[in-house]
Length: 324
Image (cartoon, rainbow, N blue to C red; front, side, top):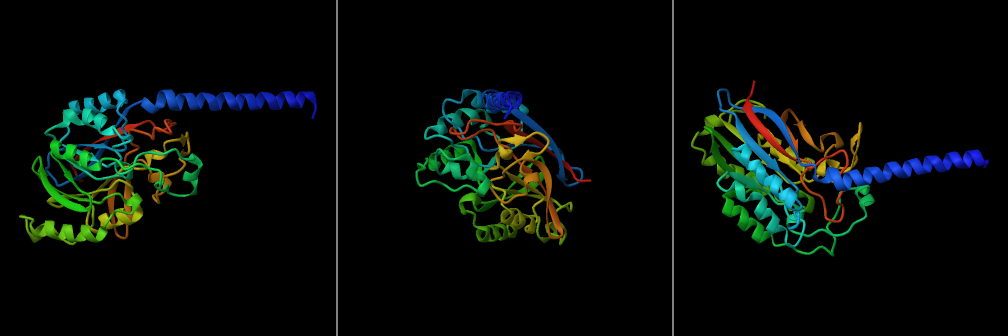
């Protein structure tokens, strides 16, 4: 190789190294804590209903020293949401509940629902990030058990409803909601058979009676709004929710890809959802039915992979409005 070609190759390699170092610095020092509130409007309410503000939070992966994250989440109480939906992976450290408590203390008295993620059961471990390109991750045998009972106790203190393989109903601003939820599908803890029975029990007690359940598609306007809640947006779970008439689906888990390519987007989803639907608001279709799907890119990362790129940490404020 000539001296000129060798010099050119060296310059190219140096430039690539500088760009990579800059991207790493941006992702780990800046974007990882560039807290972002995403706002979307979702037309799912019956005609004439009052708008309802839903704050969707997910994937805090909280460690006790992460004060900036805790303070930002606490500040969201100023939005005065009508409902909190927490889609799991709150814990990221053995003492993570200390930070979770500080983050959510300001929401006491605000109605809420929650489901578990795998990181509410197990602590983080150091992994090779390239393994995510081979398919969904698995919990390592080295992972420590976390105190999920204490986490549930905290959420009960806040008045939030546990939707892990369960169904529940509530009224918000004159609109009746029913919620369907599953325990973490990523670990295989979801029990869709239990959901079917829970829905039957819930609907048999519905004071509005059989007239509330016309044989119409998921987007049809009706007196009750049905919401499906899961941590990981696996197809089997989303399809089941849609089959049960859900009009809105809420999930987390994907981190939006966490490290994305500008102009291309998410590289991996860590589940079987299409890459294009790994974050943000979209429409999930199954058979002849459909529902709005919001996948949160989440607010945290593993303490062993503290970087985000082209995918800032986020919470979502969904304003539910009457359907057209």
